[in-house]
Amino acid sequence: MARSRKPVQRRIDEALALEAEQARAADATGYMARVLMQTTIPHSRVRESMVQRSNGTVTITISNVAGCGLPYGTYPRLLLSWIIIEAVKTQDPLVEFGPTLSGFMTELGLLPTGGRWGTIHQLRDQMVRLFSSSISCHYSGQDADGSAQLLVARDYELWWDPKKPDQAALWGSTVRLSTDFFNELVKSPVLLSMNALRSLKQSPMALDVYCWFVYRYRYLQRVTTMPWEALFLQFGDGFPDTPAGLQGFRKQFRQAAERVALVLPSARFDSDRYSLTLIPPKTAAHGS
Image (cartoon, rainbow, N blue to C red; front, side, top):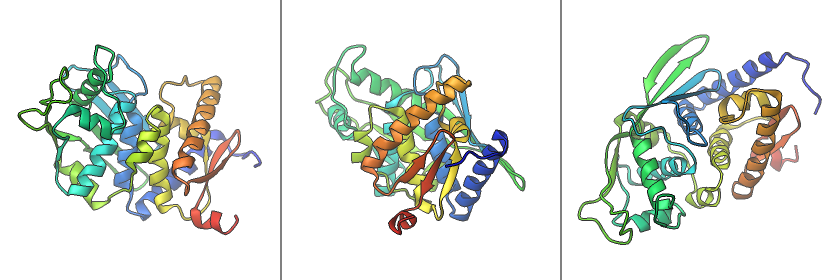
C-alpha cells in the first residue's frame, strides 16, 4: 500500500469524519459512544481523577465522583460487556449478578482467588470504581454540537462476602442501569460474545479492539482505511505521544487485532506501517 501524500492531520480528519458519517447513516452513533466509553477506561491505574479520549468528533470523559479512583484494566471492560449482553437479553434495567460471587466470576471467565491481590478483591474494587464514575459524551461536528451524560449505573448493591465467594448472600447483588444508557442498549442492541470476551480477557487492548470491530463491521459497506494516528487518538492510552509511542502502539494493536480475528472471523483487515484497512465481509467473500 502506497503512503498517502496528504498531511497527517488531514488524513486523520478525513478518516474520523468518514467514521462519524457512516455511524450516523447506520444509526450507530449511540454504540460509537459506548465503544469510546470502553476505550476511554485506562489500561492501568492512573492517579488523575479524570481521563478523556476522542475520535475527532466524539469525546468521552470519565470522572471519579466518589473518591475511590477511576476504573482500569480488563475487569471493567468485561463488566461493561457482560452488563450490555444481560440487559439486552432480559430487557430490564435492573441487572442481577447472581446469588454467589464465585458463580458470577465464572461467567466472566475469572478464577476466584482471595487476598489483597486476588481476583475477588480486584473485581469488587473495579465494580465500585466503574459504578461510581461519571461519564459524559460530547459531540462536535460541522453541522451539530451537543453533549450528554452517559452514566452506566443509577444505583448498585453488592452483598457478597468476599471471604465466602461460594455462599449465597441474603440479598441479591444488582446494578440498576441509568435510563438513558439502558434505552440506548435496547434501541440499538449489539451482538457481543461472552465466549470471545473471556478468551481475550488478558488484554485490555484486545477487548477494546474486539468491541470496536463488532461496531465497525456491523455497518461497514466498503473498504475503509484508518491512519494509525487516528486509531492512536482512540486506543493509545498509556503510550507516549511520540514517534516511538506510535510505533509501539501500532505493534500492540496489530497483535490484538490478530487475536480478535481468531474469534471474529468476519473481521477482515490489512495493514502497513501507515494505516489499517478494514475489508467488509461481502468484499472479502468476493475476493477483493
